[in-house]
Length: 116
Length: 111
Image (cartoon, rainbow over all chains, first blue to last red; front, side, top):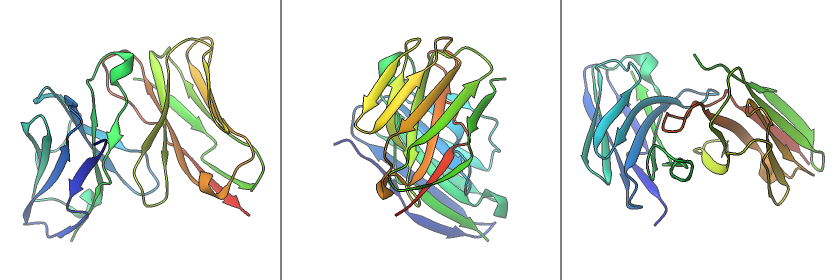
């Protein structure tokens, strides 16, 4: 299984809603990532989990709250988002975060989020 | 901070023509990866380059890493409509640090 799955595929939420994005991989990868991608822009790194511990937080607003319940799952909890947070949210995983052979990132299909 | 420039931003070619995108860094890199994202899709890993002067080929795609490990290129020979998409370079300044994606080159191909 070389797949990263993400649910939901699409999400529309109001600014007062609370929602969660889910990501799952069964490749035995120990590093998982959240990226945000706006239209016609490159993916922007938000968070990195390494061995289920948060290792990188790229100064993301607290209305985004990541969670890594186990080595296969990664969640992104959303609360009080703004319309400018509308984007494609991509999850990725890799074997690890260091070493030339561990760096290949496998991306999920993403969740297209619209905040009204 | 690390400055990465990817050019051109857009490129349109006729099917059968060649295409090249360049990625330039202001600092020496540990390694560099290349990804392709089809319209409406997600980034898909293509290759990783680690060694100075490294050249790797995948069918019609040729990837190069500069001798100084500051620049890289992706060349596609005889483009096909299936090559359409955005090609991102993703350099890593030091081993163990996160990838930083370039702005990407969007390729369109007309038949």
